Length: 276
Image (tube, rainbow, N blue to C red):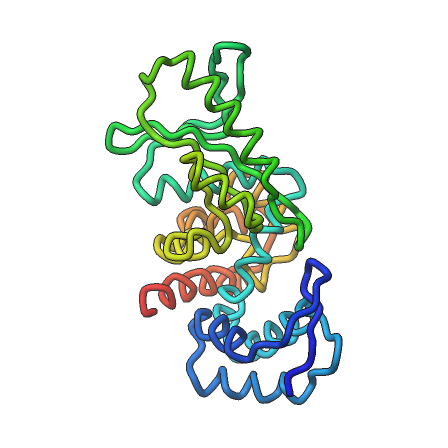
């Protein structure tokens, strides 16, 4: 009998070994490791345990096997660490889109019929021009409800009306959390593209990030919070950017032996992705 667990939203749900197994396998860990971790966690479960506690325990056990597995497993949490404001998240999404073949412009002012609008990202690809708004939440459990895409779509429609169909493309809303059911329904009905951690299922954030190895530096299990902030402030947002510019670790005063471990973690992380 599986106990009830408390999700980040505060709602209760039955503990799912299948979901835990799936998330652990996606980290790159093999079946033997995953089975061992699940057996240990199963023995520690109790009624009303939080999903955060289960996650933290699985993360700690993964880290004992290999840091890169733990880094990949903590990807969702790493996106929350791109805060506390949404500015770094916007830059991160821009870099992700660049890796996916888009040319991007950040924080552009565009004229609408009624007023001017600041657009977080304009993304161009194959003669299509997409207007993108990013919605970042630093707290787990806070989902994007229907009011957000309603508001953003009204702004985009004002711009489209002024441009008189000269912009060919889609309006997007991108969030590091999840969309409510009504938000998804509205997006489908209005033609507004929604992109979140788990939506749309085949091309959601976690899938796209794995596809191009766009792992943020916040996935590292070896960097401290202050060291991550140091890199983010210098526009080193992706792990592969750190691999290309390792001298930033020297600037921070990180010892050579530790620097090698940090860089190796990101190298292995990308290798795990290509092997998956």
